[in-house]
Image (cartoon, rainbow over all chains, first blue to last red; front, side):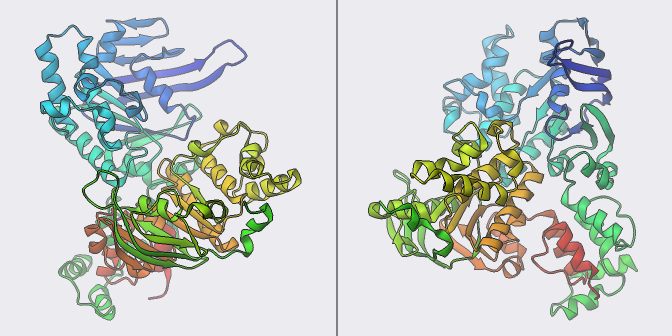
Length: 311
Length: 287
């Protein structure tokens, strides 16, 4: 299942004095099973684009195609909006604020229970979804109140509620915002596993470039509602000046690479923006073993290997 | 109650003394803080590090006088922060900000919000106007006069919350995870502001965080683990052993991992070169 967006424009309050162009002529294609990040500062149109993808907003011009469903200014062709929203799940920003049921089980079951499914099927989905987000699925846990959980766990419950609808595509708006480092890593691991095991297509909306680097292989940057740049994550992050020009902060390693490049400190272009590759490109040419000794420490095995490799 | 004039924090000292502090939340089996003793001098910039549940926020709240210790005591400028009779004085000496600035923004116009604390304490109008201007200038929000706080970005709102605290001229600012809800760019801005206020005004800052990047700017790093002080050292020393920080369940930033790798490969990169610019500067130096 791919998503195709063609020349999409969205104008809020078109024709009124409050008219505002939120998206202008945006085109993109998201491949099946991929993870694409849509980045941009507050007000750049990211969330508007997300809401067009599952029909919460209707385009002013252009179209959104999800398989045989086509969303145009005249409405949806090929099915109903429910079907589009079942296929494209949307996890809003700070979704834990939308938990409402007295128990975790009821909260996660809310979506599927409105899909005229059998009781047992609903229960199976709830347990599957909780397992998918690395939460317990036993009855005692299902009976607990979602409000007694930590922030990271509540966010997982909210994600389980979206997954219980069995979407093929999930759009996540700032999935790790406000979480501590451990909870963040946990959410990343869950999302990676959902891709690998379930083949889910992910679209992550973010202004946190570290989150993007951790999750997505493709990046699209929006600026003032228009596409500012797009491409494979590593390539986009090499263009730190372009990222800064649209008001974003490149990930730390990309900043190091850019500064080092400007100072002529890179011996070669790093193969990727990883610690290993960047260290390789930045380390002194021959002096690694000596340098480590001069540092008062014994050279480690990897530094000797690194030296051989470099030489 | 003390007269407003007594609150001239610029001449105040706020040395902090934490003595054998213990805290247990009501009904909890484990202690949140166990036998914590610390001395913090006026003008220090402390990064209080720790993973979730390490006790760092509890310690910050007790120092700030918001929570009473189970045993032990904290004095700030010689005042026991748990002593009800000292409360008004303690409130003048200590300012606090938290993760969500919206919880402490009370007015509908920026300048009213900054002046609110002073107005509530009965300061004269002319002084409120002057202090508000100074505080907004200090946090880089001079251009925000007349605006509604909800029109500001998250980072700007956090700076507004800081301005509201600064207007009261505290000697100690406790910032409990002040960047947790901000985007990366605003995080950098707010951290830089705290550092600047420490340097330029001599304000003592206790910056509670779980981010090593933010701790690198501090003069001293105190890390808690299971309610005890696990580390108390300057950043260069604290960051010399990343495995130890990993054992404290802290996330090692990519830049620190890169610096560690470069050191192993023979580059003399300092332990506290955690910002991209500092790391590259370290590489530029003649070797």
